[in-house]
Amino acid sequence: MPVATLPPVPHWVAPSPTKEDLDWEQLPVIDLLKASTPEGRAELAPRVRDVMRTVGFMYIVNHGLTQSQTARMFDIGDVVFSEVPEEEKLQYASNLKEDATRIGYKPRQVFMTDNGVRDQHEQYAVHRTVFDRQKHPKALEPFLPELRAFTEHNHYNVLHQILRLLALGMELPEETFVKMHGFDAAGDSHAVPSYPLTEDDEVKTKHVWLRGHTDAGTVTILYSQSIAALQIQSPDKKWRWIKHIDNALVVNIGTSMEMLSGGFYKATIHRVVQPPPDQRGLIRLGMYYFALADDDVKLSPVESPVFKQEGVPSNSESGRTLTMGEFRKMRYRVFGLKEAKRTDTGKEEHIIENGVVVATYYN
Image (cartoon, rainbow, N blue to C red):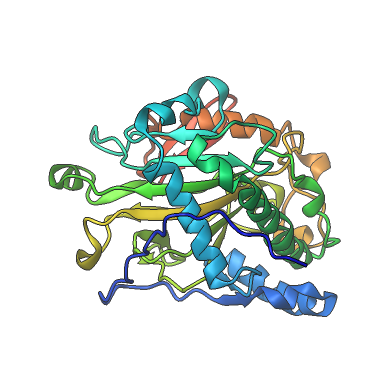
């Protein structure tokens, strides 16, 4: 059978990893190949459970894409920024405030950071169906079939396996969370280049490019890239760096999974900061897969045997809860777009209605 010829794409050269001696977080490495069998999932589940209840981040290796396949996706991710004119990008701009969607382009300087400084993150978000929900810039059209295969891989081969492990960790049927994550849900894949700030803005923001926060969705999958900028808040409340591992995934829990698990799994606080000295001035290209549950899923705790020992109220004892769709829209309309209220503890919160906190910054 002949092999299909892939369309040519300019090669994006990844920067060399930093040589700086940073305070790295020692994340566990999970071999996803083991999750392909029931026996392997049973072995991995307790470890993933413990990781996602403590550190909240983990590396995943053997996720099904080779190094060269991953590199090509970074090449394609770069196309939507380096090969598309600015005026064409505006034709595909997302409308966060009005439509509460991230699908499409977000230009730089849309989000507020700190002390009046605007962000230097550009992004292009692709709905996982690729063809059904949006139109794309002309330069990206030759690569749409590859993008669709990429989102399917992330959804079915990576996300679903993670969701099964999380369910087993709560002593639930392993398809519990999988059933809440249809392929047509509102999750998306992102390519995000981050550009350096001016020296003046670095001082104003205390070198923090994206303030401490948790993700809105259930699970976030980041393809490890070589510029050090991501930090997590460790269990001891110190900020530590995430180290690059070639062709690894960096996975964390979001706020929606914390809600669904009744706090059993904790949404992990993380931020983006100025890279170390030997990487400053470089453009940091990130590639993400943000998973959300279906819009009609209520973000109330699932019934689990572990709740008795954890003291989590059952669904019958819970009041009115938001659906995934309601929470998603509230969050997207405020995060980075509206001023938050500073609390006595130093956090900054967006409170929408009935005391519901939809976004918080941790500084």
